[in-house]
Image (cartoon, rainbow, N blue to C red; front, top):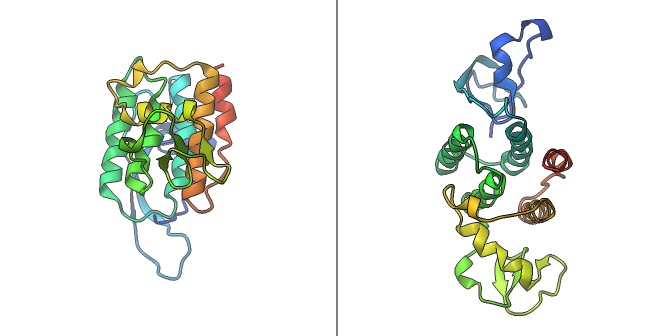
Length: 211
């Protein structure tokens, strides 16, 4: 990841360019590298792929804010990863175009990103009664010796979530409390595997929107 600094347009001059600064916007940057600079200054910025609904529909806007905060914490030290980028673009394009059945999208999105970051669990190891060890990202028949694990009842949901795709994720019915619990566990899972992963502040905002 290359850190850059940009000059934001004044409030009265933002116009169409305001869409470039919405959560999850895909922009194209051109800059002249300065080896001694901590922040690079782009010489050209353009919107690479405009979204149709992510910043306009309230539920999608809240989910986008949540996912963008997650991505910042997870990818700020990531090097070039084209398979991950292609997954992000394809998944977000589906989300942008969907008009219904996207309530579980952020769960699908965040879990499947772990496949590209190196800590995607092997669901083939699961069997009834297993615990899920969040530290080793594995299922185990005995209770781990630390506090970062899921009891068998919750661990049984992990294979169900990891096997769902964009077509089948709507089949997994979740109420507000379970969805919040799932997102809290995912945040803990990321925090255990990514150094200095921050607290996700927009989780509370997301919970209020879906209340």
